[in-house]
Amino acid sequence: MPRISFWIKWVLANTLAVLFGFWAGSRFAGIVNSIMFAYLYDPSHPGRHLFDAADFARFKTAEAAGNVAGQVTLILICLVTLVVAQWFVWSKRDEPELLWWSLIGIIMLPVGIGVGALVSDLIFPFVVRRLAADYLGYAIGGMVIGAVEWFVLRRWVSLVGSCILTNAIALPIGFLAFLPIGENGSKWLWLVLSGAVFFAVSGFPLIWLSPKRK
Image 1: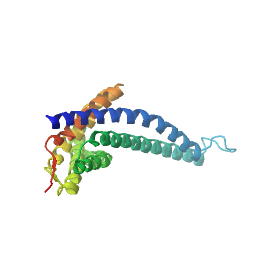
Image 2 (image 1 turned 90 degrees about the vertical axis):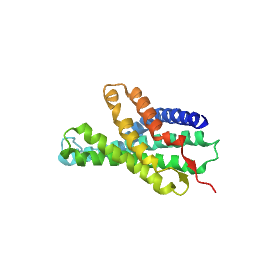
Image 3 (image 1 turned 120 degrees about the vertical axis):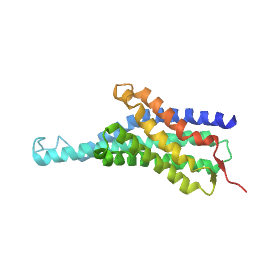
Image 4 (image 1 turned 180 degrees about the vertical axis):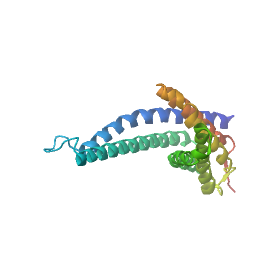
């Protein structure tokens, strides 16, 4: 029961962290986007005409750079809020090995999503339906997250190899299953459902993971 109770706290803390991180990150991302665009492109500069080819290229470059800077800001703030939430959950437990499991999972999350998107695009021409390619791609991305957790912690944490399977299930379901809800305008409901399901499944090994101590 104590482990199940801890798992529930883990899911709640991370879901709230996703919501707060997205809320705060969205606001800072907009500010960073505007600053980056203004730094790279000044429409009031004498002699600039938007429909001039060179000027249009500068405009699009500034726009793209602003968008990238904003997205990076959003991701970083979300990751920081997750680190704070997980530190709070782990602060009263003397299991540093599992704390490292948490931190590796956070660091690898954007990597797994990126791998999932890349693999999905690569295999799509060979799969009948796009949705199947997406699920397969993100399942492989989840396996990457779990494989890194296993490779780093296999000497210190028992049964950590099970994270390969749980992450392979958690990432496609958490990231894709509720996406239509977000696309139809219920962004916050999508975040709650996706965050809760992802961290519930990916964190399920907390019920049986334990440090290897002599």
